[in-house]
Length: 126
Image (cartoon, rainbow, N blue to C red; front, side):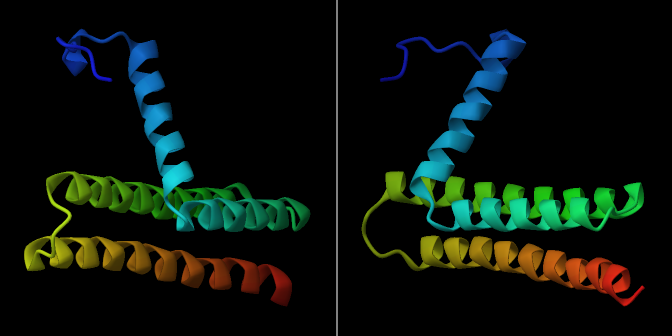
């Protein structure tokens, strides 16, 4: 249950801010079916990059791509939770917003996959 008089974000300590963010990630991982899949895929990609001894630049590209996909999935999950809190009834505006958010996740996944093909392909080809 929420505090009766929650502190504004500006009044919260940095450790509290990180705790709130960590709780949000935990809620997303526990409630969103695709987030664990993204985390598993990220672990496989990072392990393969380590085995293939990627350059720092390639590591940066992979980490940036993984972070972008995870952030998009977290935003999408947050929007889904907000939509459920607003109404359980069918609403075309909410449906469109959720579909757009899902499209954003798909866009980041396809971009990351394309980048992965390019980076891994160049390592395997060489």
